[in-house]
Length: 116
Image 1 (cartoon, rainbow, N blue to C red):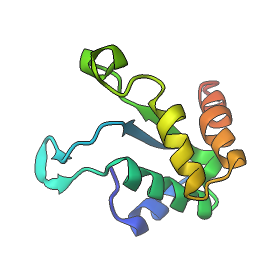
Image 2 (cartoon, rainbow, N blue to C red):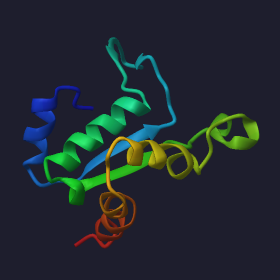
Image 3 (cartoon, rainbow, N blue to C red):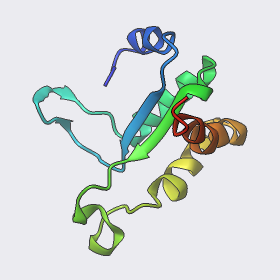
Image 4 (tube, rainbow, N blue to C red):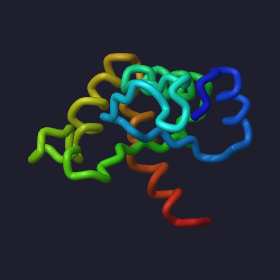
């Protein structure tokens, strides 16, 4: 996780994919270092917006981490639809366009998964 904006943009210049995961996980700190605060969904959205504004929307991937039972809606979690039902509306509200979201949510994963 790159928390510094300058470091993030330097990393983006390398041309790799920038993957934002843990949407729906509101952790207070990094589990291996309690001195590092973890970003929440709103901070993740702001970082994605920064990257879109800087022209990197074709290199962004997004995910949540549904890897335990308690994250499923059946058990009180945010579930598999969290990004589409909660995050996308916030991203649109924050000025990320539908065209950029289509790249991030559809085109980028499609290209990444071709392993070219």
